[in-house]
Image (cartoon, rainbow, N blue to C red; front, side):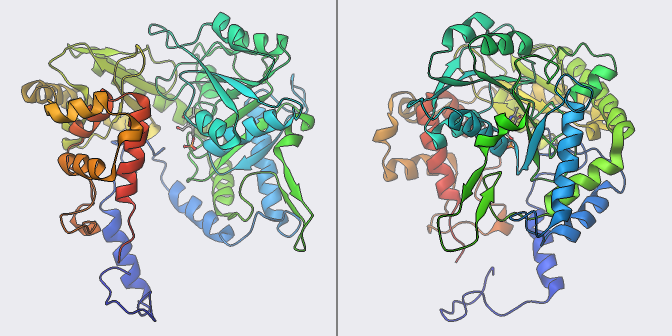
Length: 504
Ligand SMILES: Cc1ncc(COP(=O)(O)O)c(C=O)c1O
């Protein structure tokens, strides 16, 4: 569909041989960051287990056209979903013989969907509350804000301490009101990888008669094995009284391909308001446990195959590799003057900040990228400084020895380059502009100043030309960092809107 002659009656152009299409895809994929090889510290979870990708792809293909819309028509999917939920429940302190024998759950498309549904279930359990609210630590994943926005539930964020990166339990307790339908905690938080005081938070929620969701999307599939390896993992699962639901993403540390998460509830009554059924129309009766109606069996089958193949021993071995990689990366950070770990690693995240005004983290991120290390910048927030986030997976283990020296070189290059100097007019815009005052012209001017989006002729640059993003992102990050959150959000919407343009 790229570079085709324009013809209104044949918008797709003539059919193309399979090999040509695949060559096109391979060309496009070259634009992406490397999903394998242990050099990308966000977005992807790579165990580097030989043959696992091939197995997952084969399983995905076998069920790609199966439709999760109706479990009675496709019992294979129901069986696989039940097996995934059972595995997740057992791993997280539920199931026969445990303190939570009646745990049930659903397979969703990802962490965000699991969290939206946890909020929906909590909201719809209380139809008598006209203006429901949820209490979240400020460090909770942004998907809770999205859930609150989508579901018209008010969000009560509780600040986290700049030292511990956790909320104070007393503050959580104080934030609970009569309209509160859910209290949230993370195990661990994505940004810094710290585990909230789940037992204490669940206790105050239970005392108030409110549900407590543990967001273990990120860590639910590693903390149990890290604990088995001897790490001091605090209680965070269904063994904790008062925990009513837990989410865990299989497309993260269960190393399944994208599109699979599990939402568990302590019992079926807690899950019931998550479901949506509709029979008041002339078509098929609809009963959807999750947000999507039609959904491919591919991701579920791929996750099933991945779990079956890796098994307990596989995940334990991968957790040990990951733990060692985390320790090695943290040591590398400790070895650099001017960098400070935001927290001692207690899961699979290494997160650091700069203590040297001459060492701009956003420049450092670009310097690391130039050396083939793709890290994730995090903007400053409240009294927390900007930081660099590393999601560490098993594939990083063989790379750790290379990271330390490259980090030192990148830091030296970052210091030599100096901090990003935002041009005065950009800084003024970022600090004084209100989101409402942002006009299309201003956005276009800002984007052009930052090297983002459409080319001079208004067209998107051809994908083969490297895409519509600048090579170095420090200026963009510095601008966003200078702006308050509401303006950041608006700028992000505008900038991504510029990127998402049809190719003609
Ligand atoms: C703790 C936590 N919760 C929720 C999510 C959202 O997951 P997803 O991106 O699969 O929607 C993430 C993603 O990183 C996460 O780390």
